[in-house]
Amino acid sequence: MASPSSSPSGTPAQAGVSLARQLLLWVLLPQLVLWMAGGVATYRFAAGYANQAIDASLLQASRSLARQLKPIGNGLLIDFPRAAQDVLEADPADRQLYMVSSPPGQFILGNQALPPPPAHDSEHPPALNTPYFYDGIMPVNGRAALHTPPGQPLRLVALYLRFGDDGAAPQTMLVQVARSSANREDLARRILVDMLLPMSSLVLLMTVIVWLGIRAGLSPLVRLRQQVEGRAPTDLAPLQLASAPRELWSLATAINTLLAAVQNTVATQKRFIGDAAHQLRTPLAGLKSQTEIALQSATDPDLHARLQRVHESATRSAHLVNQLLTLARAEPESVMAHDRQRFDLQRMVQAVTAEWVPRALRLHIDLGMEQGADDGTQAPNDSPVWIEANELLMREALSNLIDNALHYAGSGSQVTVRVLPSPITPHMALLDVIDNGPGIAEGDHARVFERFVRATESGDGCGLGLAIVKEIVERHAGHVQLINVQPQGLCVRIELPMAKPPVPRLPA
Image (cartoon, rainbow, N blue to C red; front, side, top):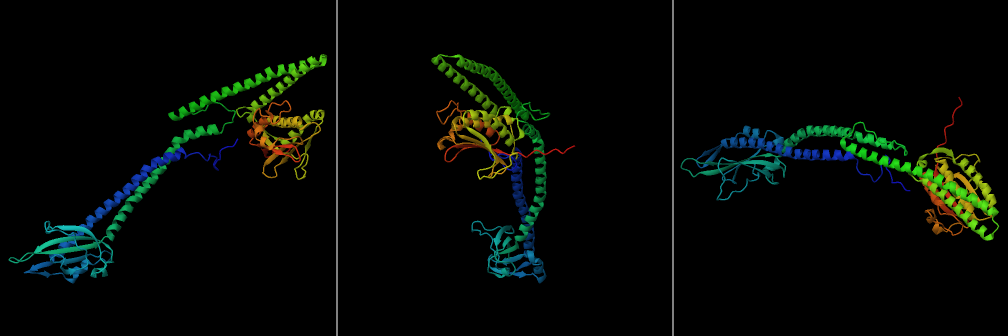
């Protein structure tokens, strides 16, 4: 039976995200959204406050500049000394640009290339002495480009003023003052960084606290998993949880209920196997004995033939019962399937093979054990091959293979059993049972491992031998296959994982 692929940590590859990670994700995701929203809001607030500060300085500069322009008749007296200009342009990194025009758009003083204010129509003329703040881009051409690079974003204020002496026609004057937006954006970024650093530290601290809280909350689930993982397959005692959340108590109760049901099923199976072994084997053995006695004393040919058929049926029934009981012991739910110990496969195979030699001699079959591989390399006769398995079940599997080989190979054939380390797969042992009989067709190799399936009509088998072998081998993480032998014959190969040899004890 193929097991699901696993990651290096032992978790099945198809398993989803851990519960702890899901909880952490759902808790931290809203925090991340709020952190991002807080950053955007902080930047907007910072930009707004920086605009307010810049707008206030621009308005103050525009009014100060307007006070230096005094109307005289139909003209203007410009009282703007060089020292005042130096004050406006003192900071090279944040130079203030200015422009005076009268009428608006007719250049008088300052930087001629400043962007104009938003246009007004005749029905809605601009309000006098009211500041208009707007954003603009420094044009490529113009004298201002000598001080400010083209394409530089600007923040500007436009102030419309009325001037003219009494009796003269009033005129409109436009005063514009501009500053680069770079400092405003730099100020907004600094405010954003100063706000996000403590916010990020708080989010990180909260993440650590939430992670520790999740681990503490899931610790009862971890203890429950450790109880289940550390158990032997035959340990069906109820799970014990000293303190656990209500939801986990429900899960533990459901598992304990299932364990109790499994324990009851296993106990019922063990009783059935014991009762079947006693109730079926004893009568069948008695029936075989009585038919043997009757055959010896029967003189009527018809009666002798009938008794012979009864004896064969009793023998076949006893064999079927033994096979069924062996198959039940090899089932994964059976306690015997999990009772394993380390033993020498080489020595066990020698003992089992020796037990079948008398029957092979009666059938005129050459049964023996071979040391070495197909290439002729020999291994020492006493070289151990250690495996960890249930020795009784492995003896049953080998006995079934030898029984099948003796049964179907035919008189005068040869049956060879051998054990050797796998030359291809490291840390694997091979157990081969080879005969030179008629073999099995290639198309039936997979089908004969099914229960009650026979590849030939000859003989009185029940079709369970290879199914039992396959069940036992797979319970021990092994593999069994059929290989045709040339010119004729069959090799049944069992591949089992090898165990580490036992550590020798030092003399006291």
